[in-house]
Image (cartoon, rainbow, N blue to C red):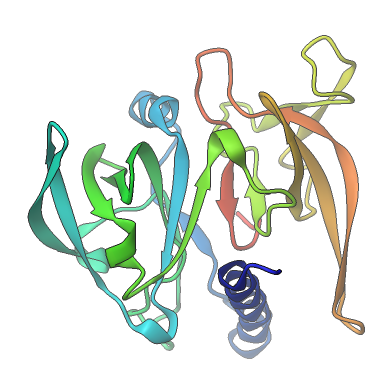
Amino acid sequence: MPNLQNMEISVFRRILFFQLFFYICLFGDAPYEKYHVTYSSELKQILKETIGILTINSGVKGGRKIETYSKNDKDFKLSKTLDVIKETTPVSNFGWQPILSDSLVTNYRYPVTAENGDYLEIVHDAKKGSKTWVNTKELEKNFYLTIIMIDSIPTPLDFWVDIFYFTNSGKRKLYEQPNRNSNFKIISKEEQKHLLEIIEQKGEFIKLGIAHYNHETSEEKIEPIGWVRIRDNEGMLLFWIKLVDFY
């Protein structure tokens, strides 16, 4: 039986996708998913510790504030309430022009650095590296959640991915097989303008595909292009999920 939550997320993503192109036509300067961190030694340390990605969306639930917790041994203690927009800095989020709404929590994405039952430790301020614990069952009351754990990525992943931002060069090795000794070619941010999706995971590799969307039939086809490593030699995560791979 189809997972209803995943279906809701997929529909939500498609709605936002069409909203994006609507605003391109209407205003010329469209909303887009923006990074709030730059490639740095601090960010590299965060990405070494990242075991997952938490995305929250308010949607019709209207959430804006989250309860945070501190952890002592096995117990969690309520810490404080944070205003998501004013008091957190996600790695990225989907931004809106002032003419629209600046109060929506849309694709606020945080690194997950630990997991304990219904609790996740997240980096809630990516610029400072500040962490806190959140309760996912509690979050679900006010937000739509997407939780992607790096060691068990659901495939095909119903998100587009950016594989270039967390690199100095803006280039990646694209392997023919999920093996470091496999033949590969170099692909670059400048050359690769297509939307990319994860269609398979094997060990330390993810297989990428180019999304081809038919607006007349509302069908999407994925063209496999090869494999990339999930982490570099130092253990740093090398990809991030995004609404649209424009940057």
